[in-house]
Image 1: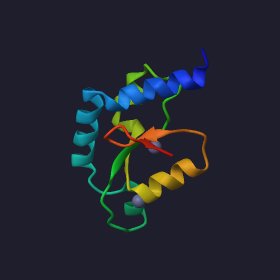
Image 2: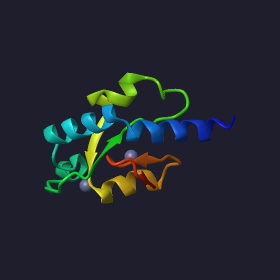
Image 3: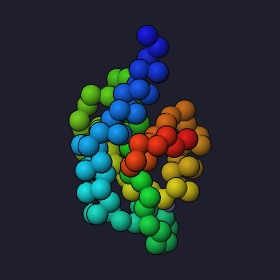
Image 4: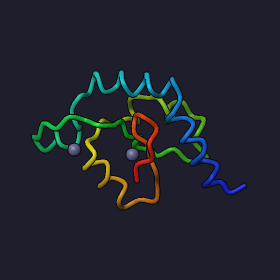
Amino acid sequence: MNNKTGARNFAGRFYKSKAWKIRSVNYRKLHPLCERCLSKGLYVPAELVHHKVHINEENQHDMQILMSDDNLESLCRKCHGEEHASREAMCFDEEGRLVL
Ligand SMILES: [Zn+2]
Ligand SMILES: [Zn+2]
């Protein structure tokens, strides 16, 4: 099996899981603004919760990566798009939609 496809399938399932939905909603209650815009002095509502270390085939079962505050970041769509533009990675928004 192709590892990359395996991780993608896992990530898709994970982002659709109830555990993640609850986690991302709670995280955004604590961090309602885009953390990157905020660091530039801009107040922009966060639209999704990003994993700083992207989920891959090696860390896909690591709860520290999946669920820890340390690896989560509230972002607006613009910052999230910029984050992913330079990387080969995928993420999903809080509704499980693929964000490229
Ligand atoms: Zn932003
Ligand atoms: Zn992301």
